[in-house]
Figure (cartoon, one colour):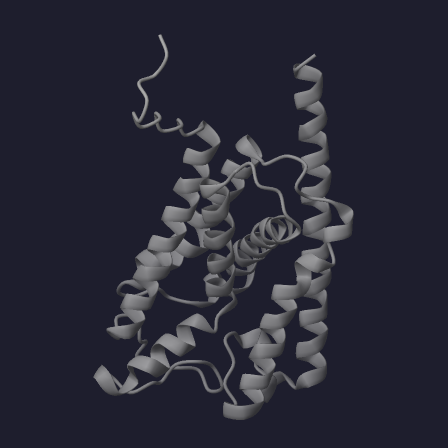
Length: 239
């Protein structure tokens, strides 16, 4: 029987992939909001701050903007923002394929992977978590990376990653490096010990950052190879 004229069309069902993308976006956005709220309310301020690193803002209302600015200046927050935006777009329109979406997805994957690895290898052994940081740090450095990679491995989208997009995917990480160094030249503070130009000097810091950029490129290439392999498996299974 034909639908009655003027009756609303049934809402399209969400695919399992969309639910997965939406879950990644929601988890990441919640982590970002929680981290900023904790920073604004001075919930993560350590008793002492290492010389030359972010922190040491006044307590209370006087330091709100400074604490939030410090928080959003970390590579961790940049990577979480990219993940949240990329997967929000996928959840909204999983069928839309554009160059910006492709670059954002690869950016999200490689940036959040670098965040997890650097945290596990360089940062976590050297810090003691207190207060709300015992929740927000693992959330952004472990939970978000694991969920992001699992959802991408299961749902893709396949075919979004290409070799020609590898260099473009470094745009945001390189932009963060530029922002971090310019800010450091102005206020002489840096996010991490291995980026502390005041202690290590520019040659050593730039060399370390160059290694990380090269590492990011290798990670992007690895995701490309994994994507190609999974796509071929899907094609074989579909025959």
